[in-house]
Image 1 (cartoon, rainbow, N blue to C red):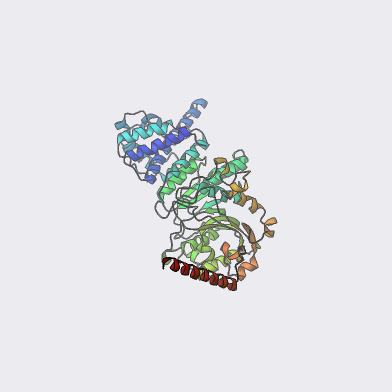
Image 2 (image 1 turned 90 degrees about the vertical axis):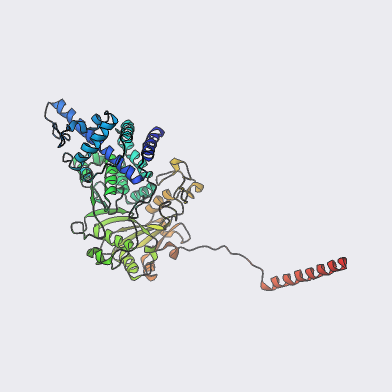
Amino acid sequence: MLTGEIRNQVDAIWNAFWTGGISNPLEVIEQITYLLFLRRLDDLHTVEELKANRFGKPMERSIFPDDNDPKGRPFADLRWSRFKNFEAREMFSVVADHVFPFLQRIGGDESTYAHHMKDARFTIPKADLLAKVVDMIDKVPMEDRDTKGDLYEYMLGKIATAGQNGQFRTPRHIIQLMVELMEPKPTDLVCDPAAGTCGFLVAVGEYLRQRHPEILRDPELREHFHHKLFHGFDFDNTMLRIGSMNLLLHGVENPEVVYRDSLSQDHAGEDEKYTLVLANPPFAGSLDYEGTAKDLLAIVKTKKTELLFLALFLRLLKPGGRAAVIVPDGVLFGSSKAHKELRRMLVEDQKLEAVISLPGGVFRPYAGVSCGILIFTKTNSGGTDHVWFYDMQADGWSLDDKRNPLLDEEKLGALATGLTEAEHTKNNLPDVLTRWIQRTTTERERDRTAQSFCVPKAELAAKGYDLSLNRHKEVVHEAVEHESPKQIMAELKRLEVEIQHGMAELEGMLG
């Protein structure tokens, strides 16, 4: 949890960029990402130096060589701990002319982070702004993993625009809910094919650290966690850098976060590779049919991105693999042939487990589209018995553009406990988890008028595989008693007589 002091430090850094001439929030976070990466490289080099001195051996991994760079500047001057003490103009020259070219050809760090720094662009326009920002970042405590992760999440929260390519951040509490529902395992292979800032992957990492602390004690599990467990795709290099840094600051050493146009590239090598998919992909409408990956079109013939992403998830999952993904409501009830066929496949060929309807304003201020969460397991042999529906009406925050919290912090999120009935009406997330666990027992007995209920597969098939909650929910209408037409007419006649008598008396008084 970030202290107020650290939040104020981050706000001051942000304001410094704003007043210094960089107002695009994505550009601000990108420049901060570069500077944080430089600070990390220096820390890694320092650790290697200490190890070498302690054991009296040469450094195993020297990030900054002992000689000069191609422009004659000592590599030692490119270290954060050195250039942060330079005078502003010299610091600007070193960072712009030496540090960033070094980043672009770095070979000492074989990680995914180094790969994403190869096209790093330095856009800080003035020496005094760079000096001010470096000084501010240097004062932010970065030793604790939780602090580093929360700090970067706080920065990401300041990206107040939807960005390009339809990107917007999935609320952290919705991500947490989906991860809790899926209960990731230390041996999973997790993929987000529209990774963005890697929020889902970060949440999986935090879940595993808390629920399975053995992953950091067992050598095999630790190796799997740092190098094999996390996979993310995106086709925006800025988001790849930001997402990679988000994972790094949350303690993941080397995830696979790579450039990939998930809907246009064929998926050779990725087929049936992953055991868990978590995603909230951008739904931009229609794609060029000719440019769409042929292996996805083999599953569903459509130009609709929301359907193609579902086909992609089925393609990526191993048999037995699970998915929790956000889809626009149109997927649940769309009447086109492709919509109906994909829903039929989920119900008949795979194991569809749940449809959770999200509140209408959950993605404000970025988007107002109504969405739901689909949860399914890839079996290729059916298995759907009953599908669990939940009508989420509140997520703990106001459903307008301001998205203000409606409860105290400890009462927010999916893991809040002890909520009263009144508090539940403002935060349904803990109830979703509780009822999800009971979906094969007591939930089967609930009436269709309840907030959650189960629908048998045969009924779904009979209704054309319509998965919209309102198609299956029963609404109780209160009985309203009305007077009979004869009574109403008699009353109207009585009133008419009274009016005529009143008019006659008035005329007599005036006459």
